[in-house]
Image (cartoon, rainbow, N blue to C red; front, top):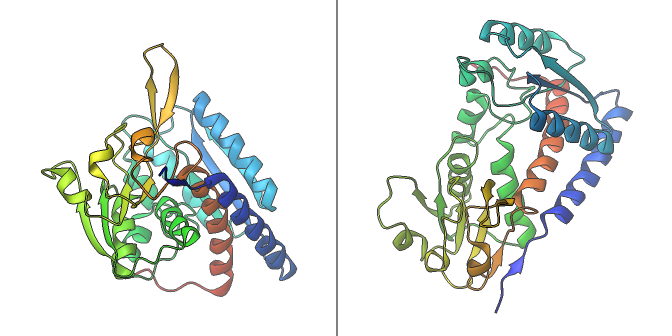
Length: 293
C-alpha cells in the first residue's frame, strides 16, 4: 500500500497563520518584529530567495529589511555590519544568506550574529545550547523535522530512529532532539558501514545527507515514517533540471508508511519555522536575556 504523503505546504500555511496571530499579539503589547536579511553580492538565485523571504514576512506581518552588500566585502566588513545590526534595538532578527565569498570564514561570521537575533539558529552558541536542551533559537531545519513528527502524531519516545547525515543544522540537532524525547537513535554518516543494516530497523528515518536518491527501498522498514531533508538539483537524461531529495521517492513510498516529498515537504515547513523563530526572537529579547557565558 503506498505511503501517506505529508503535505508540507499545508502544514507551513498552518504555522504561518499561527505566527501571524502571534505577531498581532506582540504588536498589541508594543513589541515590533523586524527581520533584517543580509546578502553578499547579487547572485540571482539568492536574490530570488530573498524576495520570497520578504513575501513570507509580509504575509505574517513581520517588517522585513534587505541589505545587499558588495560582492568584494571582506570578513571584517561583514562582522562590522552584523555588529551594527546587533546593536540596533529596532532589529529583532538577523538572517545571513549563504554562500559567502571565497576566503570568508562562514562559521566565524555566523558567530558574530547575536544569538538572540539569530533566527536561523546557526550561531554556534545556539547550536551548542541544543545539546543542553535549553536553546535560545534552535536550527530551523531540525525544528521543521520535529514539527512534522508532531503533525503526523508520531511520539518519539521509545522509537527506533536512524538519522542519516550529521550536519550541524539538520542531522546533528535532530539527533539531539530525538534523544531528548527518549527515542533510541542511530546516527549515520559518510563513514557508516552497511547503511541499510542500520536503517532497516528504524521506525523513523530522517535523511539529511545531501546525496540524491541515497535511500532506496531496501534501506526502509515497512511502515516506517521517512522524512527527507535533502534538496538536490540534478539533470535528468532529457537534459532538464529538477529537484530531488536524498530518498528515492517513487520506490520508497511503496514501502514506507508515511513520507515527505521533495519538493513540498520539509522545505516549506522550514521557511515557516523561520518566520516563527523571528517572532520568538523578538519575544525573548523583550522578556530579557540570560547570560551566554
